[in-house]
Amino acid sequence: MTPSFAAKGQPRVVQFRAYLDTLSPDERHAVVNLLTLGCGRMALAARRALRDEPCHLVLTALGGVGGPLREALRRIGAAAGSPDGQTSGVLDGRHEPRWGAYLASLGPAAEAAIAAELIRVVQQTRALGDAVQADGEVDGIRRDLADVVAAVDSLYQRVLTGG
Image 1: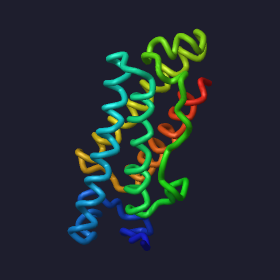
Image 2: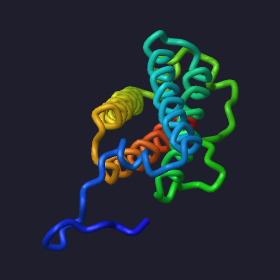
Image 3: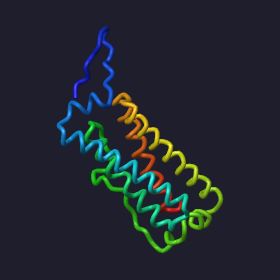
């Protein structure tokens, strides 16, 4: 997409809804649905962690966040990371304990770091959703979306590996 320029050579700011209006109805709905699905799965992961559900259920929810958000990012014109669009890894017996017990088993430093990272990723995802709902600038939403995808991937791998 070629950027348009306003007076005096300044790039024209394009709001998200105006950008969506340039897409076909099917593509517009797909982007909105992918953003909703990814953000909803992040909320599910956070709720599972807060309810102290088994770690593998938190990881399953986290693993489902990246694919839809990565695809939304691809569809709005930005590179979207790994080609398969999936966050994956091998879940094993050590992921069976409840979330709190699993984190505690990693030691105080890792437990605190993962808990803080989860909070940060949830806040980033919420800010992304707020920007979309507030009809923020599409370039800012792209950047925020790319940051959320990277943060979710990092958190997932950190929880999966225990580090």
